[in-house]
Image (cartoon, rainbow, N blue to C red):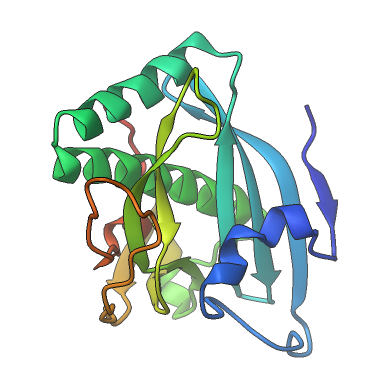
Length: 223
């Protein structure tokens, strides 16, 4: 399936993000930059496939990724097993492990989308003094909740519970001697979150800062 693209946001693609403060580039793109939203980009998370919506602001030598979220392939048995594994952790009170698993999936997907967008640039030689710069933004204040809309198959989700934004900056150049792309990363400031219960669940888990979801993560492992 080819990803669909448009230069306009749809309500469906941005609904989740509207519960959070603006996270990422705002306003009209500067000269030479274009905002494009992509829908249903398939990313393989192990044997599970997820379909990703995101917006990218592409400039001459840089790009920013924001409003990223994804849905699982609900017909894929491996996706069902993945969600069940996280649900079991949640039901057993292993909330840190469930959060870590969700962070691993999100950061892996975000890194793969970053790789796709990086592939649209010609990466400069490291000796030139130039880089391709990327930025990834994601809401920071999250609460671990149980989504019970589908009674037959509930799932664990991270719901926005306050204002705040995580970011990661990366710099890419090509090393002619090593014959490979070199990359360095810098994490943005970590905000604080006031406790705001949006789940109303029996566990009443806290609203916490969660910036691990934007860490560079090119490999997906079992958990």
